[in-house]
Length: 139
Image 1 (cartoon, rainbow, N blue to C red):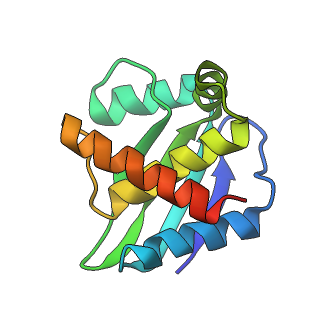
Image 2: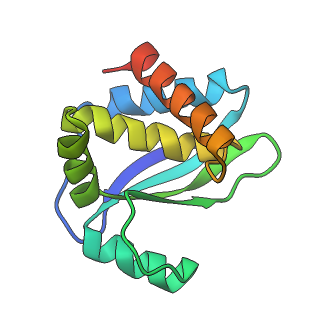
Protein backbone atom coordinates (compact mmCIF):
# COMPACT_ATOMS: atom_id res chain seq x y z
CA UNK A 1 0.00 0.00 0.00
CA UNK A 2 1.51 3.27 -1.07
CA UNK A 3 0.91 6.94 -1.69
CA UNK A 4 2.83 8.23 -4.67
CA UNK A 5 3.25 11.73 -6.05
CA UNK A 6 3.89 12.13 -9.74
CA UNK A 7 3.44 14.76 -12.42
CA UNK A 8 2.00 14.61 -15.89
CA UNK A 9 2.78 17.61 -18.06
CA UNK A 10 4.87 19.78 -15.76
CA UNK A 11 7.79 19.55 -13.38
CA UNK A 12 6.76 19.62 -9.74
CA UNK A 13 7.90 18.07 -6.49
CA UNK A 14 5.80 18.67 -3.40
CA UNK A 15 7.81 20.00 -0.48
CA UNK A 16 7.82 17.78 2.62
CA UNK A 17 6.43 14.83 0.67
CA UNK A 18 6.93 12.37 3.53
CA UNK A 19 5.10 14.64 5.96
CA UNK A 20 2.26 15.10 3.47
CA UNK A 21 2.00 11.31 3.00
CA UNK A 22 1.85 10.87 6.78
CA UNK A 23 -0.87 13.56 6.93
CA UNK A 24 -2.91 11.80 4.21
CA UNK A 25 -2.59 8.50 6.09
CA UNK A 26 -3.77 10.21 9.27
CA UNK A 27 -6.91 11.46 7.49
CA UNK A 28 -7.70 7.97 6.23
CA UNK A 29 -7.13 6.45 9.68
CA UNK A 30 -9.23 9.15 11.37
CA UNK A 31 -12.06 8.25 9.01
CA UNK A 32 -11.76 4.61 10.15
CA UNK A 33 -10.50 3.42 6.76
CA UNK A 34 -7.42 1.53 5.61
CA UNK A 35 -4.85 3.01 3.27
CA UNK A 36 -4.48 1.43 -0.15
CA UNK A 37 -2.72 2.66 -3.26
CA UNK A 38 -3.22 6.36 -3.89
CA UNK A 39 -1.61 8.23 -6.78
CA UNK A 40 -1.54 12.01 -6.68
CA UNK A 41 -0.91 13.37 -10.17
CA UNK A 42 0.11 17.04 -10.41
CA UNK A 43 -0.78 18.58 -13.76
CA UNK A 44 -1.71 21.75 -15.66
CA UNK A 45 -5.13 23.14 -16.50
CA UNK A 46 -4.73 21.85 -20.06
CA UNK A 47 -4.18 18.29 -18.87
CA UNK A 48 -7.02 18.24 -16.32
CA UNK A 49 -9.38 19.70 -18.93
CA UNK A 50 -8.42 16.87 -21.29
CA UNK A 51 -9.07 14.28 -18.55
CA UNK A 52 -12.37 15.94 -17.65
CA UNK A 53 -13.48 15.84 -21.30
CA UNK A 54 -12.30 12.30 -22.00
CA UNK A 55 -13.46 10.47 -18.87
CA UNK A 56 -16.27 12.59 -17.43
CA UNK A 57 -17.56 14.34 -20.56
CA UNK A 58 -17.25 17.70 -18.78
CA UNK A 59 -15.89 20.68 -20.69
CA UNK A 60 -14.66 22.84 -17.83
CA UNK A 61 -11.68 23.29 -15.54
CA UNK A 62 -11.56 21.97 -12.02
CA UNK A 63 -8.91 21.78 -9.34
CA UNK A 64 -9.22 18.04 -8.78
CA UNK A 65 -10.65 14.93 -10.36
CA UNK A 66 -10.90 11.87 -8.14
CA UNK A 67 -10.95 8.37 -9.58
CA UNK A 68 -12.19 6.00 -6.90
CA UNK A 69 -10.82 2.44 -6.78
CA UNK A 70 -11.83 1.75 -3.18
CA UNK A 71 -12.79 -1.73 -2.12
CA UNK A 72 -14.58 -2.44 1.13
CA UNK A 73 -12.84 -0.33 3.77
CA UNK A 74 -9.61 0.23 1.82
CA UNK A 75 -9.07 3.65 0.27
CA UNK A 76 -7.50 3.63 -3.20
CA UNK A 77 -7.65 5.97 -6.15
CA UNK A 78 -6.07 8.55 -8.39
CA UNK A 79 -6.20 12.24 -7.54
CA UNK A 80 -5.58 14.39 -10.61
CA UNK A 81 -4.79 17.92 -9.40
CA UNK A 82 -4.31 21.02 -11.53
CA UNK A 83 -1.64 23.18 -9.94
CA UNK A 84 -2.70 26.06 -12.20
CA UNK A 85 -6.19 26.07 -10.69
CA UNK A 86 -4.90 25.50 -7.16
CA UNK A 87 -2.63 28.58 -7.55
CA UNK A 88 -5.50 30.67 -8.95
CA UNK A 89 -7.86 29.55 -6.18
CA UNK A 90 -5.27 30.31 -3.50
CA UNK A 91 -5.00 33.84 -4.86
CA UNK A 92 -8.80 34.23 -5.15
CA UNK A 93 -9.38 32.90 -1.61
CA UNK A 94 -6.47 34.86 -0.12
CA UNK A 95 -4.65 31.81 1.23
CA UNK A 96 -1.15 30.48 0.81
CA UNK A 97 -0.62 28.05 -2.08
CA UNK A 98 0.37 25.18 0.24
CA UNK A 99 -2.83 25.62 2.30
CA UNK A 100 -5.02 25.44 -0.81
CA UNK A 101 -2.99 22.45 -1.97
CA UNK A 102 -3.70 20.70 1.35
CA UNK A 103 -7.39 21.56 1.01
CA UNK A 104 -7.57 19.97 -2.43
CA UNK A 105 -5.68 16.89 -1.25
CA UNK A 106 -8.01 16.54 1.75
CA UNK A 107 -11.00 17.01 -0.57
CA UNK A 108 -9.91 14.14 -2.80
CA UNK A 109 -9.14 11.85 0.14
CA UNK A 110 -12.52 12.65 1.68
CA UNK A 111 -14.22 11.73 -1.59
CA UNK A 112 -12.42 8.38 -1.43
CA UNK A 113 -13.66 8.02 2.16
CA UNK A 114 -17.23 8.37 0.91
CA UNK A 115 -18.00 12.06 1.34
CA UNK A 116 -19.83 13.86 -1.45
CA UNK A 117 -20.28 17.47 -2.47
CA UNK A 118 -23.34 17.36 -4.71
CA UNK A 119 -25.79 19.02 -2.31
CA UNK A 120 -25.55 22.07 -0.07
CA UNK A 121 -25.62 19.81 2.98
CA UNK A 122 -22.79 17.64 1.63
CA UNK A 123 -20.73 20.74 0.81
CA UNK A 124 -21.06 22.00 4.39
CA UNK A 125 -19.83 18.66 5.76
CA UNK A 126 -17.01 18.46 3.20
CA UNK A 127 -15.75 22.00 3.96
CA UNK A 128 -15.94 21.34 7.68
CA UNK A 129 -13.89 18.15 7.32
CA UNK A 130 -11.35 19.91 5.08
CA UNK A 131 -10.93 22.71 7.63
CA UNK A 132 -10.61 20.21 10.48
CA UNK A 133 -7.88 18.21 8.77
CA UNK A 134 -5.98 21.27 7.60
CA UNK A 135 -5.95 22.65 11.14
CA UNK A 136 -5.24 19.32 12.82
CA UNK A 137 -2.52 18.10 10.48
CA UNK A 138 -1.28 21.28 8.80
CA UNK A 139 2.36 21.15 7.82
